[in-house]
Length: 236
Image 1 (cartoon, rainbow, N blue to C red):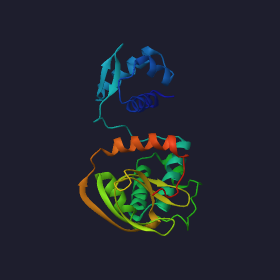
Image 2 (cartoon, rainbow, N blue to C red):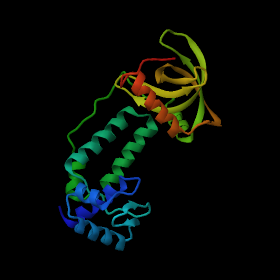
Image 3 (cartoon, helix red, strand yellow):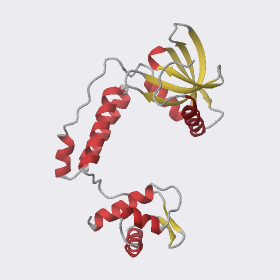
Image 4 (cartoon, helix red, strand yellow):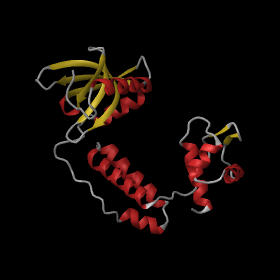
């Protein structure tokens, strides 16, 4: 590993920790001596990186420092390409376009040798005739980001229709279906709504009584106890 690669790896390691991390742990993670780690931290600070802390107390990286040009290994490039192609094929039109634009931005800053690997990657994603994004996916994604309630006209697996007011928490992308995970005011609990069974949808102006982060944490805790991972059936 070159020194430039080591400095970049140190930045990435610091960014992965939300709370102060000791020099000993960083040195062990990077496979360098503690003396080398302290020297690298001093170098990054001289270059403008906001690394707070000191030896024996731990270090934390503060936002605002521009990373050097992106460098990826072959496996990382394949992962990025495959993920981008999957989103471009299975997301709603806006999300698919965003995936293509993100790929273009990454490719534009890669060195020529890596650019060739990025452009001519051999991993392909098949189209799906069963799992379509649905006309409401973009609106649901916007409501999730803005933490706004949704009003759904929904038809369950038995054909029964109902009107629901929900707090959208997340979207699940399963092999055959797309599922909205939300807190349902009618049921007073989390429910899973298949996008292909949403008949109509309106976005409200009212926010959630709880933050989406808190709701997502509560759903994860409940899901781990009550439902096998990957279950996508209606539970309404």
